[in-house]
Image 1 (cartoon, helix red, strand yellow):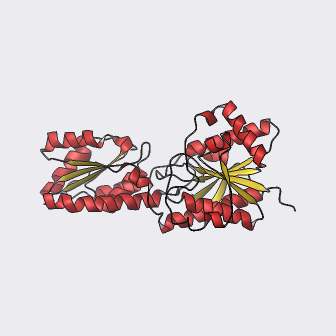
Image 2 (cartoon, rainbow, N blue to C red; image 1 turned 60 degrees about the horizontal axis):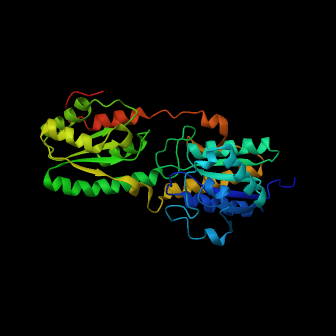
Image 3 (cartoon, rainbow, N blue to C red; image 1 turned 45 degrees about the horizontal axis):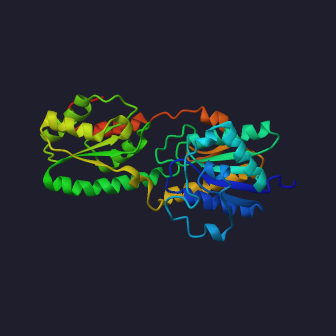
Length: 337
């Protein structure tokens, strides 16, 4: 049967994540292997509104698999969230002759993609979309893993390991804030990875006495002279937590906000491999006429899910890992649950 998909677009939208370039590379090269042309849409959905695009081939995506950021740039678009903005985007799609779009990003990116596809159908234009989850927060409900999470964890662990060297030398307390406005996956994995004294996450209501004061007191009794507290940004302000530690325990904490450094750097092997698999599956989904899907990783397997159903899914936080953290930071005292 003749392939109905002749030309597709690929874009990155929202916050950047290490591995986005690997996903773009996989989309382009898989498309070419399927005899499908590929156009790069620059600066997210704004690129469709403003006709900001570039033709992509095998050469244009060479030597980018190891690069952080995204060669297509990324942005958030308020205009695209309006019907008029999406009509402008559809005009560009018709101009370019796009049959499908692969959108790499997070929840907002996918909701925008689904809205565009539905609006296209209302205008008599068939436009299939496929989403690839890429966010360092690992907070996409339908997928157990998102591109960029592993690299961000490694970056944060490397930074905290260096902080620990100086904290240990001066016998100090360090409070480190990592990203995670609504999800504590990054903070929890990093906390386990660095052997933190305490970890605060938005999924668990913070009790300062239980979660900070008692943990540090137990560590003191066990002979520890330096303490590491990891805070997800959605669980509280690292500066405020540092002040309270000073007031209640007499310590002089040093506060570090890692910020956007967590989004940068060369992607890890896991993120490169995952992005390559997801990009490959995204193109196959379009070519095989399975549009309006999200590519997800579930139990280690790659699969495509109906986009509307996938967006309704929620991710259960892995509290078993928090229990591991609790056991490892107990220092011989009564277990705190």
